Image (spheres, chains in turn orange, purple):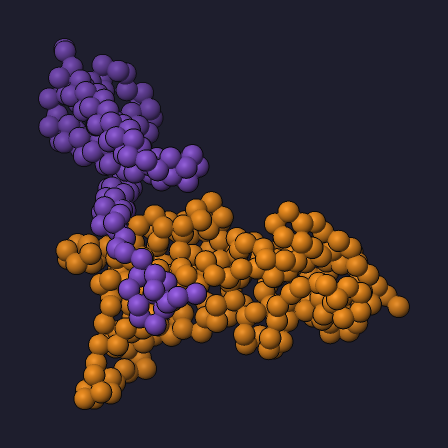
Length: 237
Length: 132
């Protein structure tokens, strides 16, 4: 039987790679490989997954140095010389093995005012948003984010500025800035400005290159820069 | 984990973002000066290439700049764009590469901007007033 040489990160931040031999199978995903190790070789291996079909975003890891959803990554796509290396997501604190702490990542969504703030009451009519209105189109471009953290793990700015809100949180803010039903545009633009916010982005585009949902957070961040500048010029910041 | 302080469920967030306005204005200033520099650098390069290709001597160049209000105004604008653009970019580099984020950095950057502007003005003024 053909074997796959798998190097897996074990332990916390000060851990190390350990090697495993996993039988190679047809249409095998990287998540299948991790699951095989946990069920057949070492049950103490910790990792996270839920849906296994690319809906939840829980199984994102670093595969051969690149952040990916392991459930949607075929071994055949990434294997080199019958070997792969699997590590926890970069830019996240490691809890154990392949499990990372997502708290700071999602706290940054809150700091970027990622919550929808309704401004109508139950006595108001439903908002009517035309599907082809500019705001709806702009929001649509970023709305499918499921918070997997691949963009955040791929972002150079996050790696050198831990305060940076990151592509996912800023993309979320941008979808709300374009939501005509939202009542916190001004506060949100103030929250995402500055060197921990949209102005820190260097347009490296790693987030957009790696996003499994084909979202372009870089474009959302550029949109925020423009919206923040307009707000500043109008004295609304 | 409590919702207070984390902004979940619409709770107030951890205070305002104090640098929002100043950082945004610095960003606008750098973008605007970049647009100006795009034009100024082009004119400056064309001027240099013209001077080299026509074999103009130092004296021949000074003869054209001496008392030339248009050239003086152009180079004042150029110097202003540089004095605005370069220090803001350097400030970001200091943030990201050196981790220098204290108030002392802003004083250093302000001094650098003034120095660039002063030296640039001096050079522009010198070729405007060049002795015959």
